Length: 125
Image 1: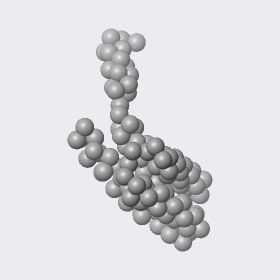
Image 2: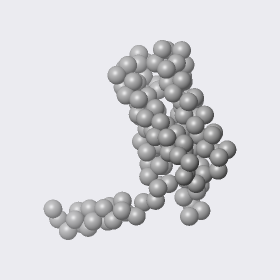
Image 3: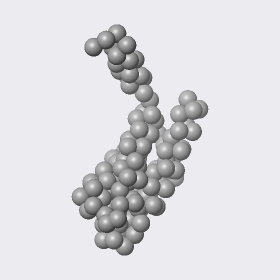
């Protein structure tokens, strides 16, 4: 490994270690949303790719809903309730997408809005 690559590697590792919780949340939403965006235009849809992307999105929202359900969560109660509602919507809508009765776009839009909010909050910190 040459010196430049070694320096890049060290910088990259250091950058990862100073990430905030919001940054990690943003990154998780970005990865999951990118997978949804990638499978959205596929015709005919590859059900394996679609199911995997939807599973990852459901898992992310389940983790988020579980986190805000904790009474020790510092977010305001109304915001916590809205997040739980969004998690429930994402779960139901994912089923509709899998049954070919709905578009992926609402899930992409919700995740993008959450990312926008996380990005705004990161800028304030």
